[in-house]
Every structure is written in structure tokens, then in C-alpha cells.
Image (cartoon, rainbow, N blue to C red; front, top):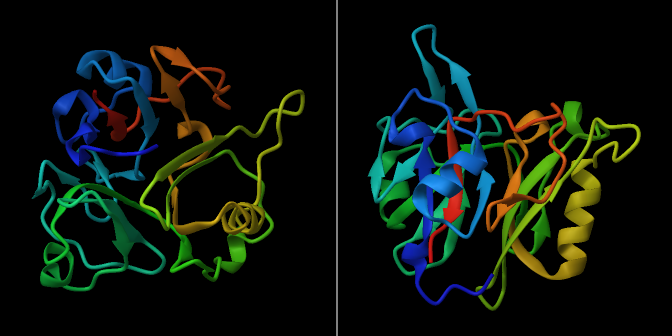
Length: 210
């Protein structure tokens, strides 16, 4: 993806509401987007489903600042249109990068062109994956890999994804929510085969609105 206008990239909360869920297809249709993928991870707080880590929508931290914990990172689009990301332990270190949209998950795959350590428990596991990355020239890449389907695809390990991203010349690469959440929608059509047999409703999606 070549971005001439960074404002076309948006993080969409489920039904535009913190605590709500929505499929990628629904978010794409509702916003008039041309392309969409699922975004960051989410959890049950006991009262509602919330995104993990930090989520930025239109320049605002929608759940307040949460310091990075373990391998959880934040990645997003800055005001200048760069893919930013990493682990942030204080709010100032994040806000000085001027994030406009962004989500959280784990782990970081490529930083400065170098593969990053993968958590031991994830090293050899094949799963459906969703990836966002950026080339040295500023172009973006979005990848969805299917999995958990013996007649279609078993998924991919994070190590293999790292190697492929490095081979493609990706300088920054981040693993977004995967498994049954992984979905890519282009012009209203679901391009992959979600492992649940249908799209999962998720806490947030990343869309491109022309």
C-alpha cells in the first residue's frame, strides 16, 4: 500500500463503541472502506470486551494509557504517515510519536529490519496470522494467512513469517490478532477463509477509507 494521505488509515472500534464487537466485513461496509483487516487483541474485563494494551482512534487513547506488559506492543500510524510501534512504559514516550490510529498485540516481528525474539511458547506454533508492516520507502504491507484447516492451510509460525518479511525487505513488522480473528476484506469481499468457518466479531478493525 502506498499512502499519499495517512488519514485514509483508520482504526474502527466495534460499532464505534468501546466494549462492542464487529466483523471486519461490517466495519468495512459501515465506513465505506475499500480494504479492512482485523486489528489488535481484546479480552473480557468481566463487564465488557475491551482491547488489550493501548488503542488510538483519531489521535485519542480510547482506554487511557496502559504501560507495555510482557511482549505486548503498540503499533499505529503517526500524523506524518509513518508506521510507528514498540513497547511503551510511559505515556509521553508514546504521545511524542503523534499516533493517530493504532492497536496493540504481540509480539514485534521486525524492528529496524532485524527479526525480534519470538516468545518460546509461540516459536513452533502454526496459526492463522494478521500482519502489518512497512518497507524502507514508506509503503505499507498487510498480510493475512489462513490456518487451522487441514483441507486448506495449517497456518504459519512466527519465525517463518519473520523470514518472509525480511526476505521481502520489510523494515518494521508487527503481529496483529490472529487465530479465528484473522480476516481481510477488499471491496466487500472476504479474501481469506476464517478458521471459525465465518468471520469473528472483534473489538477493532483497521480499514482504508478512500
